[in-house]
Length: 293
Image (cartoon, rainbow, N blue to C red; front, top):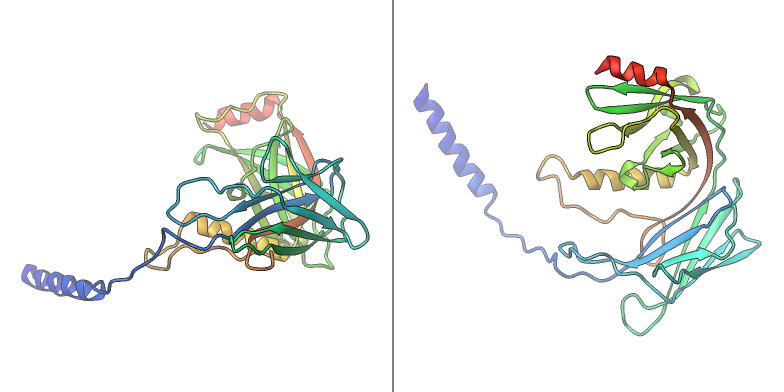
């Protein structure tokens, strides 16, 4: 039996060496530069911004350089807002006085007067995003999970039955957004809710490990519930999938995630409506956590 196993191992080693003999030359050091757009506008009246940068090569460990001097316009089909580059933040273009976008409207972003590829000819880029409506959550609660060392944010919500809806969830602690990176977003379709109803569904998390500040009595936890488009839902899911890496090992190299910017640019411009539900951390809630440790 040992001799048979030994022979099988030899055959497998020879087979794998044949399968891996082909040499593939991947040019990861250089690539054509592309415009990268990171823009989101919401239904809240505050400073809306669009960030412009240049792509870098796959093996380049430098930060994406900002794109300055662009002309950036935002239109709802009737009014046009010019976004000016912030003096203290290169590549960030903001509305001068801020504005609140309106659910049910579509918004067009136009970026022009830039020469990303360096050929001496200025390019223009466009993107259009629809802003869906979103209902207010009924309520939220917290449940401590000792095995994962996290607080689960649970949602109670009634989804509108006559439409196909998509949602994004983020968390604020005492008014500060703590799930600001796209890897920390939660996005779901309304199929996630059984029979259109969320009764204590886990939609976001707050880490409770040693590196994080523990929740205190009186802290205010806020769930931000956003109405997003299917296209942005697909974009976030794709970015998160690429960020986690591909499995199995030989399933393919990482790739740029397709966005909604024209002319070959990367990134996404989105418009989403927002609503909130708050919870004040009580002594009883913390006592339940201590009992579960």
